Length: 247
Image 1: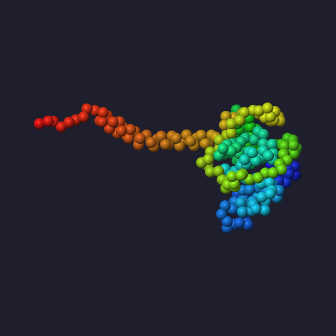
Image 2: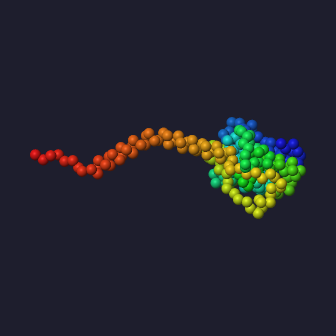
Image 3: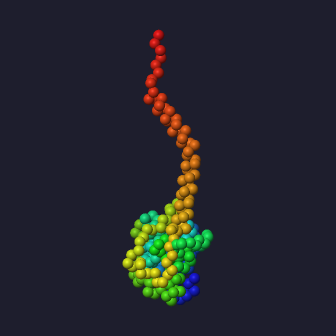
C-alpha cells in the first residue's frame, strides 16, 4: 500500500507510516510519555512533554481503540475529504480508523464491502479506514490533491490532551447516517455492495448476548427462592391472626 508515496504530501505520508503510542525516548522516565500527538508542521510524533515548542503548530491528537489508531472525524475532515469512510461514535464523538485492520475471517455474502480491503461495511460507506480511501484514490485517480484541504490551523481539544486510550469497555457503535446530496454522487464507479452490520458490531452484540444469558443463568436459582420467601411472608401477614385461647 502507498507504493506511490511521492504522490502524497509529506505530512500525510509520515502520518500513515508513523508508529504512535510508543514511549518517547526523550522522556523515558516521565509518566504518560506515549507519543499520541502528531505535528503536521514538523512531521513528527510527540508525547505530551514535547508539546511546548510546537504549541503554535498544527497538532493532531491520535487516539487508540484495541491497538488501532483512530482520528476524530472533525479533525480529519479539516485535512482531507473523509466522505464514505465509515465513522463510529464513542464518548459522544465520531471517529474513523486511520489504517486498514486485519480480518479474522473472510465473510462473503450480500452486502457492502470496503472497496480496498473487502471489510464488511454499513450503507452508505465505501471505505473502512482513511488509508483505504487514500489507497483507492491513488490507484483510480492517480493522486489525492483534489481531496486535500488547506487547513490553516489545527489545535488540540480545548478540554485538554487526554491519554488517547479507549478501553474495550467503551463500545464503538457505528454512527447512524443517511445519503445526502453530496454523498450520493461520490461513488466514483465503486462496486456498491451492502451489508447488514460491521464485524465490530457483530462481536459487540454477541458479547452482550452471552453476558446477558450468563447473568440470567446465575440469577435464576438465587432470585427465585428469594421471591418465593417474600411472597410467603406477605401471605402470612395477610392471613387471620392467631390468638392464644382464653381460659
